[in-house]
Length: 230
Image (cartoon, rainbow, N blue to C red; front, side):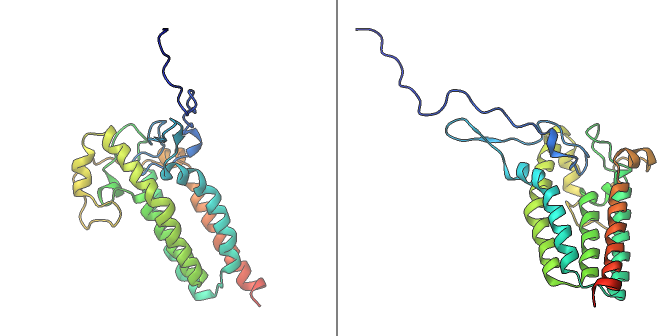
């Protein structure tokens, strides 16, 4: 009798290639851009790659943002006082984001100076403040609920995934994360690296795009209030 051959597997022998992370875009909190192996996809019983939800969230958050912007403008009920208060809150969020973008050093080092001495994710914290400002200006509870849902479902998984990457890449992240909150800023600064704000980093990270988009949306609310809300 000849030697018996092993039973054939019910799964395909060739595994699906790992999807590239080049399309994920800049999402790092303490490291602005995400390297190719910042997330670990799971494999099913057949060996096929199953993207994690954080990977999916990275890919869909820009389209979700555009859809939300359209719905936001449609549902907003702007009046002068809420727009003014909302604009002030938006400016605070933009300032926090701008300050953070002028400190972060991509994946070269763990940034712990500037706003990173108060919160591990000042970019996301600034974005949430910015979103609260727009929610206030819109005067619509559905918009406020949508903002909360998007943050919990889309952004929190990304934040957790980024922190796993930072913990693996930088040995001092464990001590840093023990002292500095993930989101809500501490009252006193963490005694980490000092550093200084850099306009070159601000321009390199193109943070001015957030300012331009925010101003455009605020102007759109004013136009709707003056000409479309009658």
